[in-house]
Image 1 (cartoon, rainbow, N blue to C red):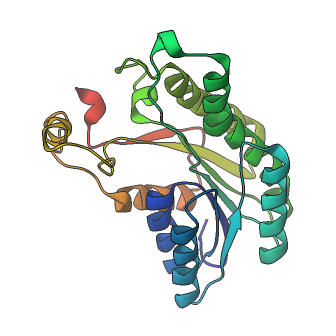
Image 2: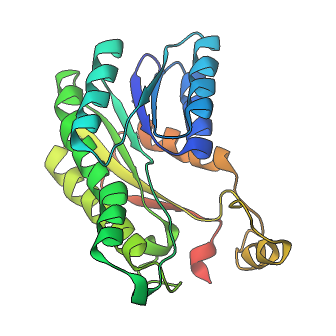
Length: 245
């Protein structure tokens, strides 16, 4: 699929989402972004898109609320006259010791990391099919994609992101051949806020390519999964080989 002239919805992913949106707008796609708290970055991204001569739309939505999620899709569909590409980047990443884990924390992770992706896909797929097909790209995590947990205190996060891979595979079968469904499992892309110099060195030393990837590597992978016409049900790790250690 050529992204030129296509309508794209990107959910979440403030920093990396900006790079993805810019790459798509630069290729001629109309871009809509949802946000919950990062209004400034979302509006900045929409403005970049308009400067590139395509349409940019910002929609505030709590995607863990099904009604809010449905309204967001409706706004994008109305503004763009349809939808061709869905990129699910909404995610939460919180450390919780097993002894402190409760049903509220569990549901919070499942709703944000897995259920939102499921509901967005379910509601966007019919719109895409009316336009002849489309692409859905979910976001998992390199740890879940490695097939084994590596860090303690992230039980609901790990399970939810493993579920995203299962969801990707199941939807790829259900929505073929009109819609291709794939996932990306990022590794060390951007240093998180508050990372110490020692922790930074440890991440780099545990990554075969010896550096942080940068959001552009995710944008390249998104473009690849949009442009391919014969890959579906896959999860691609973009982690500099981090999973090899």
